[in-house]
Length: 93
Image (cartoon, rainbow, N blue to C red; front, side, top):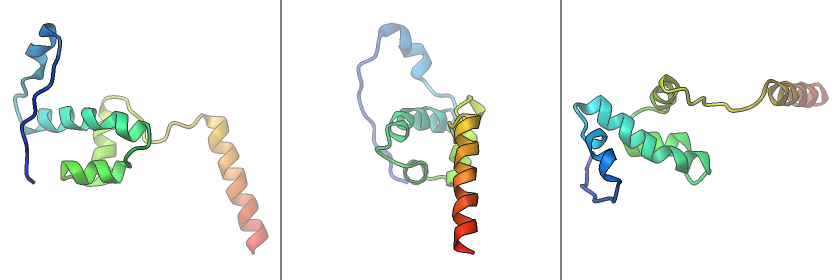
């Protein structure tokens, strides 16, 4: 994967946290940079994974290690979706 260096403005106090010690930290930093674009639906998890050079499931697992869920539905929303799917299946049978 080709990499580019970029320059960004950050508060002085952040500088010590920007240096990465290994590839894992670099991957996490880059994944976190991409997350807002996933969240606002500019890109998908699959596209973000492709950009990072990893599998989609690996990206989902990476986000879960810092408490970012793949599905952000409430229990009620999930139950509603399941009910809709069951209803659709019963009508197509």
